[in-house]
Length: 133
Length: 106
Length: 214
Image (tube, rainbow over all chains, first blue to last red; front, side, top):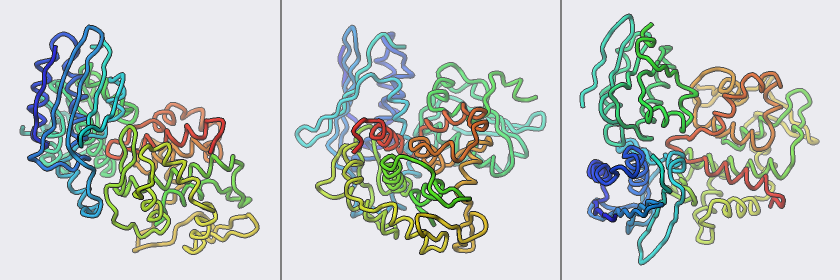
């Protein structure tokens, strides 16, 4: 099964992403786990990629009998370190209160993580081996 | 989501409902007035279906604040997945978690 | 205010003899570099994900050593991978331990002569800054492990480093280590939600564990 969703790079899109994920989880994998992994990655991308709200993040999902593949693609760059002061950075974080540091959680549930840089975009692919509920 | 503190048996109780994620987490943090806790806060997780690291962070902040105020915190009623998240992150080792909310009251 | 590396050095000093606790030099020096990186993360100058460390703000910290490390991390030739970066920093930061000791001297906390460290106060104390005396690191670390206080990210980071360079048995008695083993294991692995320093600790530990060091 394959599905994909185009999101804007804003935290408020989280609800839409997780609702989508909830639908596709079905009986293959626990919706909770899938939502959690997606939330951690999505919030982290927003936090680090320096994207403006008009830019896109594309979430894709593909399943085979043995594995699930989740991919996040964004066209961002890191924060411009000249432009932002740490207190601003901290304030932004606190205002948005983005979790996004749940790498431990991601690592617990995801079997493989691959980064790729392609055509000015960042592609992150997470692989979850089944069965896993 | 509106968070309310109820009082019972000398403690204040906060019942969480639905989700605690990167959007609802900050809402909780903003709305919760810990001054209203006299000596003990019980957070009831019975109706909470989902938590992410953002939610964990808010809970931790609450714990820290109460500790510096000399008040106690008990977490109760966690469903399987929620408890698992606390375990994986190591938080269950540093927070006071009990299974039954009745036990939390006593 | 002391940075994490300075506090790590203070933890390594035996109060009675003034000597450094017996440790493998390379391991301790690696841990010092790790401490500098973690300090930058705690100050929101850098962040890391599962693989890389990157600069999120270049604003100076007013700590020359930290600012030097920050510049190195932000330099074009800096490695993307955190493990390689750690190695690069280790090799480039000359005389790190001496520099840190000198600064502690300048701050009036210790005097360092003939390989011995002398506290300038009868007991471990930090000079008062802005009318607020900070809790000294040994006290904080012991409290974090021996009581049920909710740990501060900074102290968690220090505990992980202490574990990596074998300082635990200097700071705690063997019965304390036994009785609080569960908590120690827990604290060493805690995910500092909000500060991604776990990766840095892992890299330090891996380098220490690898047979060829640096």
